[in-house]
Image 1 (cartoon, protein in one colour):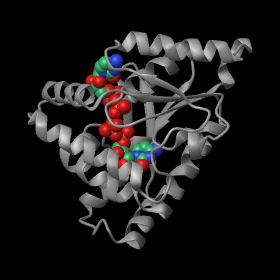
Image 2: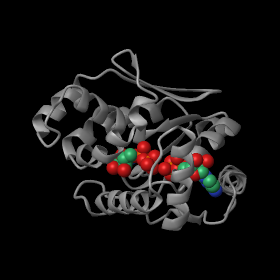
Image 3: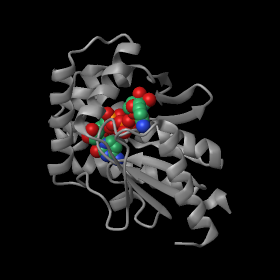
Length: 227
Ligand code: CDP
Ligand code: CDP
């Protein structure tokens, strides 16, 4: 029964979506789909091809002709673009600072949303992003909107980037995260916002395990048929 469950996790950058979504999926035996990685992958490829990112028809052509694959194993999430492993390459500051331009384009979103729905069709999923509960999987069994204070999200990202060898300035990072959130919230196509039936979980001050348990409880309640 757990197999068919679909879980949508949305929220701003650094709220903990991918970390907890991956663990929830693992523990419930579901497939984890990182939709942010898909927007990043198209951004990476457009930058590699030195495309003008604001040229929508160029970007849409590129998105339609991209073999994009995601995988999850013990080591984490793997991302391949046209057979090339871009798992690390899509997390660079250059991709991060350009991804909202691509994510703001309605027709590019349509291409990726179609892929996301196909992935969800095949079985139970935990999918994270910005528009999963509102647009990609409006009938998801469990919808979670994860948040945390901007200070905490910036601090989490700061530590993560330092660990991965990208030294950054904390204040500048905070500013960049706020700006990206603002673009995600104010764009015309599928803006970041909670679905009406989403459960809000403020993760400020919570450990990763506490957040995972809160979401697992919501999933169990759903499967048990309770409120
Ligand atoms: O990991 P982080 O929260 O920084 O970002 P991400 O989940 O990898 O997503 C990167 C960007 O892709 C977001 O800032 C959005 O602009 C876009 N995105 C989106 O528009 N819709 C989604 N479902 C997922 C990501
Ligand atoms: O996917 P999203 O951008 O929402 O966040 P993430 O990449 O999963 O998490 C950002 C960082 O916060 C990771 O390094 C996590 O280890 C850390 N973190 C967390 O996710 N949740 C907490 N309750 C505390 C820390």
